[in-house]
Image (cartoon, rainbow, N blue to C red; front, top):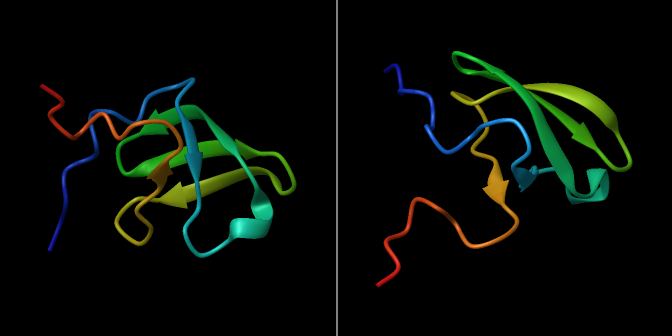
Length: 67
């Protein structure tokens, strides 16, 4: 089943890869459909398929409604 791209994943957002904690903090560089290019501290630039991996937001998750 296809998922829509996360509208909160945009260049500049800080994320982590849940299955690769050693990669460290990552900054989103670009978003093209379901493919997100992230520059990680210890792994360099990686292209992530968001249908396979759900990146974790480092700061407060913007998808949550905060009153």
